[in-house]
Length: 347
Image 1: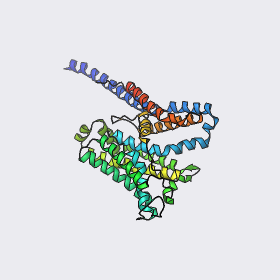
Image 2: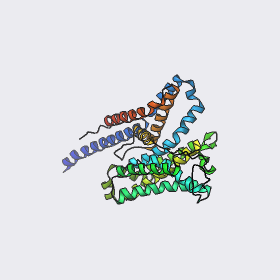
Image 3: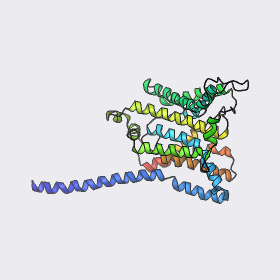
Image 4: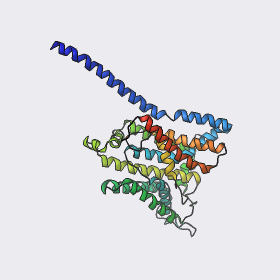
């Protein structure tokens, strides 16, 4: 018995460090994945400085950051939803239709091009906009989780329907007479920096903390990795996914508030085509389309990378018509890199 014990114990002691080393390597790889775009951002900064000395000026960098705010909120929403193993294409329309409905309910008809109802005080425009976003997310969640409809088709249909509603209510025209409370965050500056940047930084910090430390945030990774296993472990999968869809739509509606305030109007096509940029930034930021993988910081670096590429191209005199082609190319390249870097075998 003593001999058996002597032979067994060394085997166990050797196996445990090997397992710990493997776990440590996986953790280190995950951290590297989050930071993988940081060198690219630094290289883009160097290229931008070479192209134009104006690139590294405070005005240009703050301008890039402000132009990233609305897109970054959609990317933040998409990150939550993709980590949970779901997809919401209707965010592209929510950023436009939620502000239009809110203003339609608040502004009275003045005989001009936009005929509002004027049912609520002007100060309620922002709460109403966020409420519209919450309702859109709740309806999507009901159709997907309760009626068990295909999420891709549901949100694609919602994208089209909401876009049509946006055009119909705005009568195909830009709405320029907005309540002052609705435009404040998009125009105000705090400590010399646009308020929208401060707000987005706070939301990203809260989102990253929720995914990293909150129980429900960590549950998103379990749901996205294997929903049935998560359900077996006692996680309320449908409830959490439903909440995530609502939060995502509210973030999209809030992005609409920032965008409308920034430009002082609501366009009839506001948000059109944004979903391609959203997925480009999210995918290159390391968020998996299959669910269960990704981080808020990685998604943020994806947004900054895309915006810096556009900024450098603009300073270099490249026509903006190439932006959409570039976004699509970036998505494909990111998928290829992610496929080989992960080491996963395709069946």
